[in-house]
Length: 132
Image (cartoon, rainbow, N blue to C red):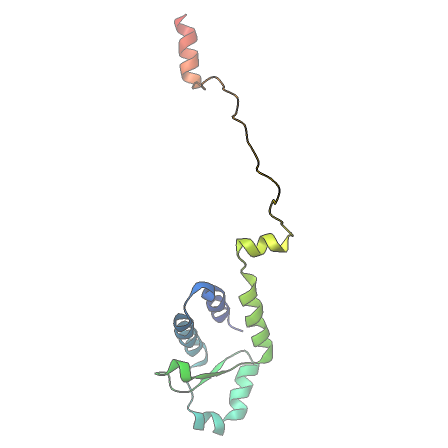
């Protein structure tokens, strides 16, 4: 499967459905060529399936109606797409994966820190010693 399609799928996590559709159609057309008509796909089904099995997705339908188009890909490529879509996880999902459990006890009171002397720059400190 072409890396551009996998990248589109990974980036689509927070995009709208229409944006996902438009970007996928654009990317797949760049890779697989112009969309085939249903008649041409039917007449050349063996060639369409051969390209799909070799990792080149085939688009069938009218490009002006992106929602009405179909894509022919191999099952191997479909599995790769699903894997790419699952790879990005949110911070919450990462915490769940490691077994994080939020604290459910009582209130935690944190005391104030110790007061410390103000830090001085080394040039100020050496200048003060020289003046003495």
